[in-house]
Image (cartoon, rainbow, N blue to C red; front, side, top):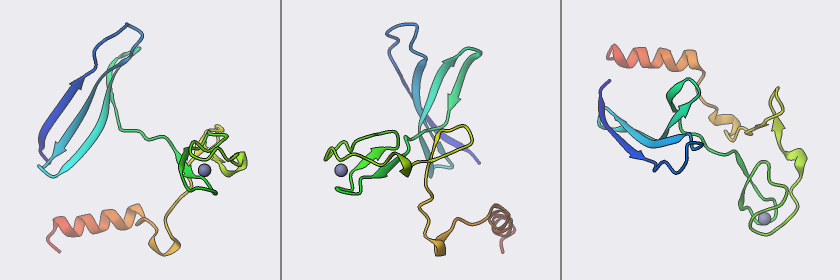
Length: 122
Ligand SMILES: [Zn+2]
């Protein structure tokens, strides 16, 4: 694998409390782009964080997207059911799997076996 391109967009440092230093994107083999990597000035030095996305679901009334912590819909103002959120062991919101039963992601062992086959030219 070859890193084809790295783009870094520096964030102007407004005050020392801002830990976000830059956003960057990395292109692998000229085809695969990873966007919105964050360069963060942490307590133990600078590190790169993978892209993150707020967990969201749809309002039952208007189908607008809302953050899982929202109590009311941002679009129509409907009260949202707090019990809709599944929680992980630490009580943080957990996304609900959206894969239909007949289209589940491939188990890791199967996926790796298939990759080995591709590498061997099978
Ligand atoms: Zn709504």
